Every structure is written in C-alpha cells, then in structure tokens.
Image (cartoon, rainbow, N blue to C red; front, side):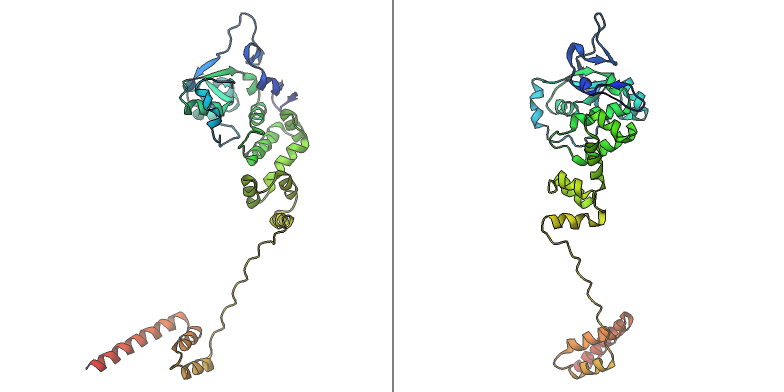
Length: 296
C-alpha cells in the first residue's frame, strides 16, 4: 500500500510499521554500511507517548505484564525534531523527551507500570513525513485492537480525511476502501444515546451504520422498532385542576363536619397563594384566641 498524503512524500505505511532491525528506515532512509545505527533502546525518561494518539484510553495493560522480563516487539518512535516540525504547538506536551512513541504507546505505559527502566525502540522519522502519515500510522496500530473505542477511531479517521483532503486519499493511507472510511465517519452522525449504546456493545456496528443514514430525530425509534421494542412515550402532563367557585365552597362548608379536608381542597383551588397565607394566619390567630378564652 502506498499513498501520497497532502503535503507529504509517498510512503508505504506497512513498511513503516512492520520493518524492524537493520532494515528499519531511519530519517526516511535505510541504514547503510558504515552509517551509525539508530538507538535500539532508550531510557523511559527519554520517551513520551504521542500526544496525538487517537486512543485516549489504553485499556487493561495486564496482557503486557511480560514486558517486565522481555519485550517482544520494539516501539516505533520519531525524533523530537521530526515531531515538532509537524506540531510545534506540542513542545510543552512532550517536555524534554528525545523521542515520541508513535506505535507502542501501550508498551510504553506497561513498561512504566511493570518496573522497566528501558524500552527497545526503532527510530523512523519517515513516520513523521506529514501529519497525515503520522495520524494514519497511529490509526493502523489501533484498528481492530481490543478495547479501542470505535468512536475514537471514527473521529481519528475523520481527522485524517481533513488532513488528506479527501476520503479516497485517507483510505489509501489506511489500506482500506473509501466505503469503510465513509462508514466510520457516518457513526459520528448518531445521536448521543446511540453512540453510548455502541460503546457498550448494545448496538452492533453494522446496525449503527444503517441508523446513521436516518435523520437523528428518528434514529432511536428506528432502532427500537428493529428490536421489536416500543418507542419510549413521554407521559402526558397532568391537566391543571380547575379552580373552585363559590358554589363549591358552599358545598364544602355544608360538609365541613364530616370532611374538613374537602373545604381545604376547595379553598386551595379558589384562593391564590397570598390569600391562602392570609387565611392560614387568620385561622391560627382565631385558634389561639379561642384556646386562651377556654383557659381563662
């Protein structure tokens, strides 16, 4: 697979990711006889994870616990200078690191977690030939990895299309079809409710792709209908209680002995809040005066 990213040279991303050892590209070239080899290991303090990694959550690192004894695969890194040529605004984010890890951020995190002091690396500044190339390499590393949020992937693919200038060029960078790129971007058109369902695994991607073509206001109902579930119905608001009138008050007074609550209910509907407070105060005062008279 080879593709030309906007503003960058033609690169084989598969070669960038897979080639290791003596044939690994360094600064865009292959190592030549007599040329000093790139470092094969680095102190963890000299490394920093790619600030632009599309995967914000690295997930459970227990599958990499063995890195404390042996590292099976080196991390792909670019030099500080190569990275800052693309993202000078990230200088504070990478601090004093000499290399930025592009492929192997989980390995770097596991190395910190399980007590390593060094990490094997392969330096490939060709991976920083352009923003599009760097982003594509990061996406390729994460696609199909367990625990990778499909919506993070979709946002990264959308950003790659912006960098490349078209879905076709982005698809070539990723070694995917333009249809796959379009389908991933379409997931961003889902409602928040369906995006949450997609993250939880309650909504299959194949179903989500279809729902993304439906107007957002109809998506949830369409999804529930496909599951033979009734669409949620909002409860109808309770009609306001009609205000009591004078005849009702009269009837309530006649029933005062057996049902004083009826009078209270009728007065509540007949008087406004200020009038009710005045009535309560008057009744309280009358009751106090009555109790005082009885005790005299």
